[in-house]
Length: 218
Image 1 (tube, rainbow, N blue to C red):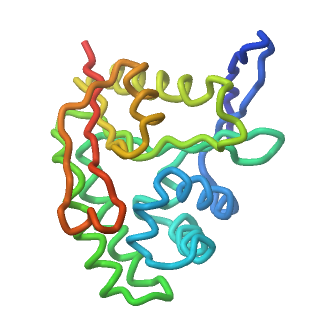
Image 2: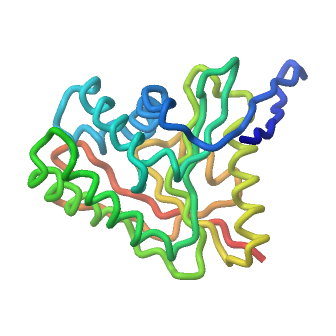
């Protein structure tokens, strides 16, 4: 399996190399922690478990061969062999298929599938429609310990370039409205808010509005 190396520059003008590769089932533990940190309130509501048990189930979804959380649909970046960042992005036309596969994987978790599916349906109201000619960035997260090295920005720029080269007219991302740091990050990289979605039934569970942010491509 080939690896590429992403080089990021830190404020001291030193360069740090972060090898990039496809996700692997063996990355499950680290990947689950990164996914959970990206939007803890979302997963707290969905699974209604302790953070440790939530990550255990996210790890099971990561190890699955299909679905939106599967390692087969993610890229990872490493530092000294440890996974420190991951991303999932794809053409809008794949979104429905991945959602269907995820629904099937939820039935296999050692949890009450009825509750999982009901809460997943409620959470789905947070996310605006994805146009067919868009590229969708589902997840981009970097370990808190490695932030500040420019890695997230480099990953995002590469995704935008990939979408542009493939002929799509925009990159769409759903950003937690309660995370001003994430909103500033995307804004700094040319994204703008085009929709704000709040689900009344979820407000009492500390789930803020979801912002659909878009980077338009030439």
